[in-house]
Amino acid sequence: DTAVSQTPKYLVTQMGNDKSIKCEQNLGHDTMYWYKQDSKKFLKIMFSYNNKELIINETVPNRFSPKSPDKAHLNLHINSLELGDSAVYFCASNLGQSEAFFGQGTRLTVV
Amino acid sequence: KQEVTQIPAALSVPEGENLVLNCSFTDSAIYNLQWFRQDPGKGLTSLLLIQSSQREQTSGRLNASLDKSSGRSTLYIAASQPGDSATYLCAVYPNNAGNMLTFGGGTRLMVKP
Image (cartoon, rainbow over all chains, first blue to last red; front, side, top):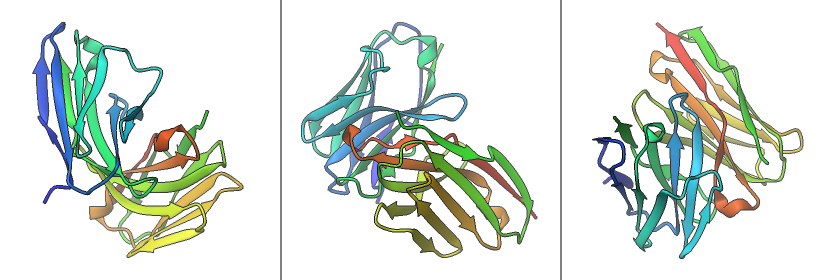
């Protein structure tokens, strides 16, 4: 049973397209996150979503928007993709400030 | 703004050595600290979570310590094995900022047979 699952695992798309990445957790956690890992492998928080409260890292372009249909899902929508958006995107979840669990990542390549 | 630093950035050791990975953070007002392992092309695997009231946690050959006042954590790996080769990441939970983990840049470990 995968605790935090993301789809797709790989995504190749052209500049200017709009794409979505899905994330689901079956751990009963109340907080979900999106992180971006750049080419230098540095992980940076993008969003935190808890009980309908969204906290946004101010450096994230507004082309990125998280959408949560329910507590177990947090999807990431990206509009007008740019070359610089190429990275690995990780979904994570936890309960309060307990141990965080991460998905396997989605490698996005914009060509 | 919290900054997390991990030194060294890369480490290569022969099999069997005991080793220490270092993590430092600039703001000591943290809630928890978590160590992760990342294999190439894979996701993050949680190794240990140290709560702010704790000074250390152990899991098998791994021992992590936390000194909030000095802004430091160490991950000790005993009797290293080639299978331990991976990138090790530490991350801190600030007391505010919506539970968002702040990560260090990681230490890339290579254990040679």
